Image (cartoon, rainbow, N blue to C red; front, side, top):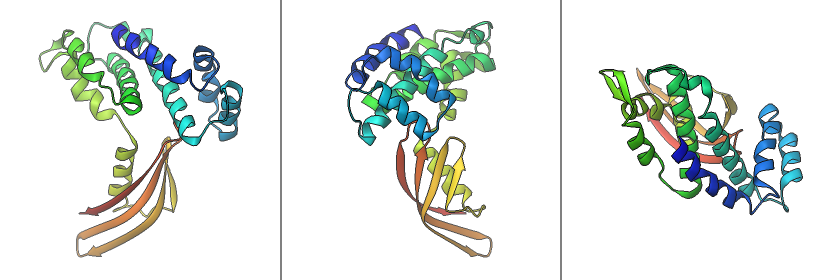
Length: 215
């Protein structure tokens, strides 16, 4: 955890300093957004901390940087380190926080911190022969839980075969908006073809997806 934290910290500080007055006051005040994700409140946050006017892309970048820092702190949550079994749900949750920080770094800079992190986890021995070290636990339980806009879009596309969605739906902290959708059936066979936009309420990032699902 320390190596990951120490690698991400200077990257965060250098990147966000181009947009805000103080990287660490901005990071600390991010709690204001966590408590209230109303768009007006987030815009007020940007007005308070930004050096100048921000583009939509810059706002997305700042929110991603702040999320990376948030998860860099969450991975030190003390309750996750009270236990001597690396397959426990508490320790897995800690590794999930680290994975989220790694994910944001990959999205921001295309940098891979995961390989080094897993190599370190491999040295942490488990008590369960099936999950003999931390790397195996991470690959089994943490990696499949990491979500991005593409995976949310895939969930929306597959479930649209069996659920009649309105034009816009909420999927946890995401919104999916249909741009085009056709649903065909022939006997027991179903086909869904469509286009949709997936939006994250956490980072304000959005992505257009096209899909064709046959079942």
